Image (cartoon, rainbow, N blue to C red; front, side, top):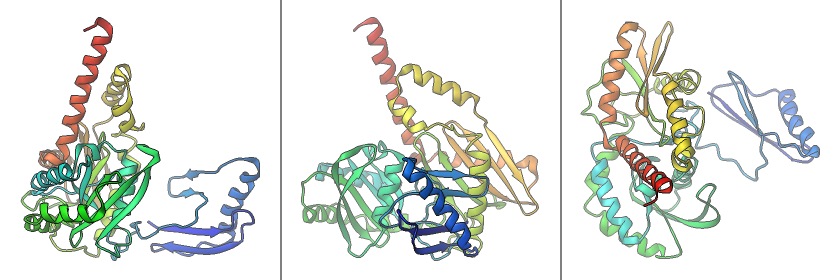
Length: 386
C-alpha cells in the first residue's frame, strides 16, 4: 500500500509540497495537476469533490491547514501505530483485560468521568461502557490523538466529538502510566490535570506488572496461551456491531515485527476489503442502526443480517485466505498455501470460537442485547400501556 499527499493553494493550484509513503514511484506532475484541476473546476460552481474509488485506488480531496501521515501504516517496519482497518477501533486481547478493567472502573469513579480507556501502543485494552458508546470514528480519532506527539507524559486537550458533542468541547486527558501504556478520559472542567495525574498514580501504582504483561502481548495481540494452527500466518478478528477489531500479523511469533509482517498485513487487508466487507458485513453503518433505531428498524436490520454470507475464501499460488462469521464476529485468516482448501473452515471455526471466548469481544454484545430488551419493553408499553 502507498499513500500520496499533494498540497496546493486552493484558489490557484500553486504547488506547495508533495509527499509519499510506501514503496512506489513518485506521481507524475501531469497526474498531480489533473487531480488538483478536478477540485478547482468544481469549487466555483459550489461543488465539493469528496472522493472516488476504484478497485486499486482511492482518491480524496479536502481543504486542510495541516495533514498527518505518521499514523498511516503503509508497510513501513518503523511505523509503531497503525491504521489498518478504516472505520474500526483496534483492540488487543490479553489475559489481563479483565484485571485492567477493574482498576479502570475504580479510576473512573474517582475522577467522576464515565468515559475512559487504557491504550497499549494505541490499541484499546480496556474501556468503560460509555467509552464504547462513542462512534467508531470518534474512538479511532481519540486513539490517534493520544499516541501522537508524545512530548510530555500528560495531555489536556479540548476536543469536539463529531457525533457525540460537535458544539460543546470535552477535555481529553491522557496520562502515561508506563512506556507505551496510556490512560485516557473525557471529562468536564474539573478536576484539574494535576489531580487526575495524582489519582492515576495512586490507583494504578500496584498494577505495573499487569500493564507490563499486557504490553508484552504485542505484536501477537492475543494471549500466548491460545494454541493456534501452525499454518496460520495472520488473522483479523472484527466485531461488526461494535466496530472494533484485533489483528495479528505474526501470530506464531512473540518477537517484534518481522520483515514479512507488513506483507501479510497487506494481504489480509486486501482480502478484507475486497471479499469480506461486502459479503459478510453489513454495508450500512451497523453502529447507527444498533444505537439509534426504533423497534421496526431493528427487525429490518435482523433480516439483512440473515441474508448476509457466513464465509468466503481466496486461493493463490502462495497463500490462502478464509473468513467465517459467527454471530457478530468475523475472523479472516491468512494461511500457508499448502493447507488443503477443505480444511480451512474447520481451522477457522476452531480459532474463532477460541478468540471470541475472550470477554473483550463478548461484553459489547451483551450490552446490545440488554438495550434491545429495554427497547422491546418500551415499545410494548407504548402499545398497551403500563
